[in-house]
Structure formats: structure tokens, C-alpha cells
Image (cartoon, rainbow, N blue to C red):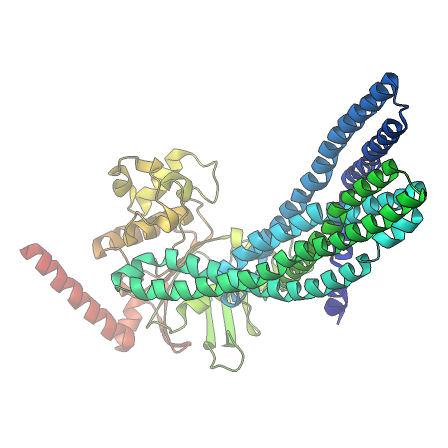
Length: 594
């Protein structure tokens, strides 16, 4: 109810927080804009006076020079003041875009994974670009149009009413109420159409983002033609929605000009009659028509204002809806002041990502002592990654708890908790920078010697040195220029270089060969003797050294123990290990023969 009430307010009122924040800049800009409105009155007055003196034959050279001087001074004054109001109104409006983009980006960094399951990347990008641009135009051009449409029009009309002829003024403004009604009706249609076009742009943006990211998969399946057809359909829909919005946009100017033309017609008829009767002079009529001409822009500004108000309202609603969403995972009100590594105790009765579905984890209870290594194995979808996500607090346990060093994870500050951990996910996210910057992403101040040591531990140093630019090699978006194994090992280097108290490897050795895997595991055992390590893997050879191995199936622990204990149980672990060892032996023999 509060949200609905707030959104029913005028968009300029809802943006009042920004106008108050930048009130000094807007005050300077508005005063300059109003001053221009007053200076605009001078040239028509001078023109009317000169025409009347020419008509009566009383124009002296000194009067002409004085009037020319006044025209020059007015022109210089308006030039300077127009520069000022553009800088302080239009220029300041860009600050709103900066603030809103920062708010959105900060909000994105705080949201849990469920937020990104609901909102597509392209849609979020559209909010941070198109919607914010609409707000920026409103805070700049919208404010300018509002002041111009009100102050300039009011000053000009009052001057026409009191200084020239109130009768002609009343006749001239007769069409204006009808214009206001027409533009208001058109504005409501624009509001709806713009909302639909923004949603269409989000769909288009998301389609482009997905298509570019998955271009390799598209080509490998020979799906280019189908993808092109799908894109063309979304592109065509976006075009039609934008054309619908544009249809209403382009009607604003003709409607305004239609009613202004009616004002001109009525003014000329009324003015001609009054000149004939001697009620006004020819100079007065010229001045009046010039003032009426000056009203064209303010009255057109009303149309622009309605347009920008509707667009700004739609965009601000979309942004606020996004900002009002809360994360499933939040910081405690009074987090523990410090954090230290210790025993990790899992006590999960049940965990489900989405209500109404089968549990993703059930009856998961175990303790991992400080400094031990945990191995998580099992078939795809057995719950290994879910356990890791709960430890990272990407999601929270509702039925049960996870404790670290005797305290529930929810009692720690999120930043403190995650600073204790180094995480290498299944899908490695590498940035479109150099290998050096990717490895020391967590701390850009790390020395290059530390970077080299980390890459040696993850067995990727030799690969890097074989590249033409070595550590300065640019790897492209998501590491597109690297192999799968190289991506995994660089991501592992990024985590290992920080020497975290808890290192989590989620199926991070799947793309490397058995020999490389053994070397990496040996390095982990050597360098992390007093640190906690969690390894999730499909290849059991990666966890044979672990102090505790959990075999997961359908979200439950079906076997647990050390490597030798599990072999003795002759269950899933023993059968899988024997099968993998046989496959590895056959592969070695085949490679040896070739």
C-alpha cells in the first residue's frame, strides 16, 4: 500500500530528494533561466518602439544607437545566462544518473543468487542504461521545460496583458485549455506505450547478451539460422513497441502547433480590428505577435514535459521495483566483532531452494575439524554444490544450522565470513584483463613473485610462460582465449594466492589431466597443512588424501570416512574408484603405445 501511494505522487515530487541535494545548483540554474525570460522581453519592446517612431517620423539617430546598444547588452546577457542554466540544470542532471547507477550496482552486489535467477542480465543492464537515461533527461530537460513552460509563459502573458492589450491576450489564450486537455490525454497513452517499449528493450538486451555469450555453443550446434530468426522476432517486436511510442511522441508537436496556429489566427483578426479602431499601434501589434511567437517554445515545452514525465515515471517505477527487492541473505544487526577459523559443524535437517519442491539436502550432519581436508563426491545433482553454497552463505539454512568456530554462520558479518574463504566455483569467471590482474584480483597490490608462485602451485605457470605476452596476456571476456584447464588453474591461482583459512574447490579439477591433478593435490597437501580445505570432485583421485570423505546421493550422505574406510565398505565409493582407476590405467597404456 505504501509503495502504491508513493508511486501515485508526481515524479518530480518523488525525485525531491535529489533536487534538495543539489538545490544550490538548481537554484542558480533556475534563476538564470528566469532571468533569460525577462531579458527575452526586451528585443520585442525595442522593435515595437522603433517601428512606432519610424511610423510617426520621430526616430533620432541617438535613439536608434541606444536601442541597438540595449539589444546587444540583452543578447550578451542572455548568452551568458543560457550557458549558466545549461551547466547548472542540464549538467547537474547527469549527477542523478551517476547516483542511481551507483545505487543499482551496489544493490546488485548485495543480492543473493535467487535474485539473479529471477532477473536476467540483459534486463538489469537495461535498468542501468535506458531507464537511468530517461531519469537524467527528466532531471535536466524536464526541469528546464517546467520552468520555461511556467515562468517564461507567465511573464510573457502578463507583459502582453498589462503592457499591450488585455483584450488581445484573452483572445490569444482561448485555444490553450484545449491544448492542455489534448496533451494530457496523449501523455497517458505515452506512459503505457513507453512502459511496454522499455520492457521490450530489456528482452532485446537480454537476447543479445545471451547470444553473444553463447556464440560458441550456437556455432557448434549449427544453430546460427535458428538463433538469427529468434533474434529477428524479438528485434521486430521491440521495433513495433518503439514505433507505437514514437507515434504518440510525434503527435505532441503537431498538437501544440495546431493550437498555437489558432492563437495566431485569432490574434491577427483581433489585432487588425484594434489597429483599425486606434486601440493599439502597429508597433504594439508587432510586439504582441513577437511575444506570441516567444510563447511557441514554452507551450511546446509543455508537450516535452508531459513526454518526459511519463517516461521518467515508468523508468523510476522500474528502478524502484528493483531496489525494493531484498536479499534472502542479510547481515545480522549485531555481528560478531571478530572471526577466526575453527571447526565447521553441519547440522542440516532439511534445505530446499524453492518452496513446494523436494528437499535438496536432508539429514546432513558432520564435523570438519580445523585444518582438515574434506572431500565431497557423488553423482551430478547429489547436493555437493548445495553444501558449499550454504557454507558461503549464498543461501541460508532454515531447518538446522552451520557453525564455524562454535558460532552460527548467521552471527558473522558477511564480509568477514567470506574474507576467510577462497572459492573456486564450477563455472570460472575470469575478467577481460591480463592474466596478472586476474590472478591478483583479490589484492591488486600483490607482488609479481607471489603471482608466479601461485601459478606454479596450480600447475599453470609453464602454460603462461609459453604465451607471447606471458602474464600480460589479455585473455578476453570470460577467458575466451584459454582452454578449460587453463581457466580452472588460473581461477585456482586467484584463490590460492590469498592463502585463505578455508579453501573451497568446487569441481575445479575436472578439466585437467590426471597427472596435473596429482601435482596440484600434492601442492595443496604441502602448503595447506594447517588450513581447512574442501574439495568437491567427480574424479575420486582428487580426494583420496582427505581426512573426511562424504559420498552424497539425492541430497543425503550415504557413505562417509577416509579413503581406506570407504574402500573397505565396498559401496558406491569403492566401485566408482575401481572403475576410474581402470579407466585411467587404460588411458595411460593407450598414450604410451602412441
